[in-house]
Length: 492
Ligand code: MN
Image (cartoon, rainbow, N blue to C red):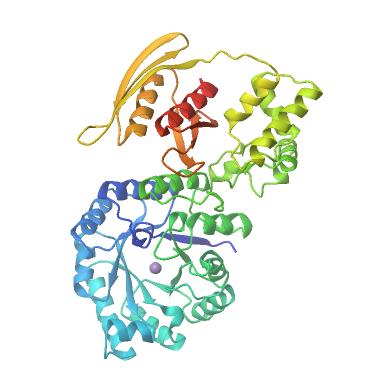
């Protein structure tokens, strides 16, 4: 196939329908700009009629002058179409109920013929208002296919520009999806048909791919697969599969996938599962000893694609499966050499931590190596003093005295709580020495009760280097600070 599949991204519409999610106009603009740079063809930016905020978001995104077509969701109602046109959208994704259950629930007493008549009127109205119309029957996968075809034919006659087949509740299977799309394409040859899939059975991506095999010209996707219920087909998975496994082109710049995914994660607050394809934290991280030694010799032995293709880096972590090769790689980086006996001891101690069910951090590994080799390392960053004020009617504030490379630094900062304030103060203190980013922060209480030992693991980044470090104390603030100090000493 040498055609290029179009990508309609609906992160800002279907994605924003994720329970509990609401993005500000500024956040929506940032995501729209990132999607445009990523190369999506159509950005479904929201539903103009839904609220003043949605309307304004579409209006502001439309005025950003992006390359992508800006689309608003709408029903077959004039007020919806007016809102989309008034907001300056280029197009509408217009949806009419098409399954018996949707028709009887949304338009009680109406028949299929009535839906066709209302849809035709709405398409004509939208065309009069100068909009590109992409028309879809909602819940089409549970509708009568003959009715869908009739509906499509009538709306095309009324001026619709593109069609969409929707699997609103995610009940399609790949085979059915391909077969239906083939039937539709044989009937509607000269018009683009899109596929819109939900992930209720975990098949959204597979269904989308099979629809393309069946002839679909456009895919509806969201970044990280966010969306109502189980979400939508994930852009990163659909695009990577089409491009890298099927050799089907899209306009997406693969290298920008990861940064876009992380931006959406940050702005929506919806965490990417670590094992998620393409963009999950672990997708290009290797721990197991046998795998790692093979990876160090030939990366493609345990990687389907090289991480750079999708804008990522390979990360090797040492855990209880750590083998000699990965420990040797760390030692080389640190400039250490171990005897055979020392090496065995190092590996034994690393496995001991892992066997306790604990994460083995980079700082743990370094400490073990240095303890076994009896290397005394001068700490470059030392915490000399820390005081924190927190309580009711007090802005949590922390002041720190650090000694960095022998120089005394005093800083203070506020935060949303005592931990945040302390971390902020430390970050301010080291700012002039290194540009360090706190990528993740995780807390586990090892035992129950408010006096429990708290285990904090932080992930810090400086340039290309990422390290993990732990702090374990009964005081959560001190555990957090200790983890930060351990990590900083690995990076500065
Ligand atoms: Mn949907």
